[in-house]
Length: 98
Image (cartoon, rainbow, N blue to C red; front, top):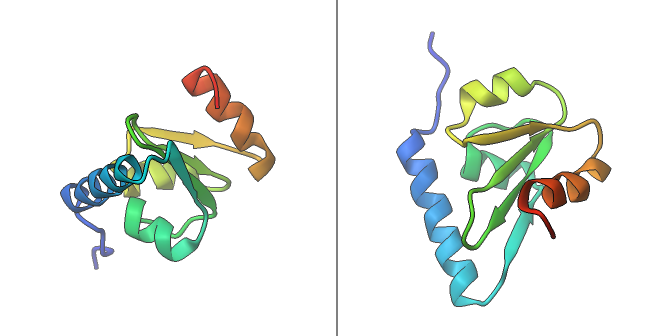
């Protein structure tokens, strides 16, 4: 039996809509940590978080199964973390600032 996956074009549409709303509301970005929202925006319920900027590619941070996250999600940037405390530094490194 093939596991259910949210189609990648659906995830991309959802992220584009979220980014549009961020721009409309003049917000720079959002950090998503709830599992239901993670499923909705990146297609898996793994332990991690998703950082979405209004005008940049999102970053997905995963604590456990990085390889599984790469298979399940169409997002380009999937980074491994040991702790949620790693996230601010990785965001700063990736985008050259917070």
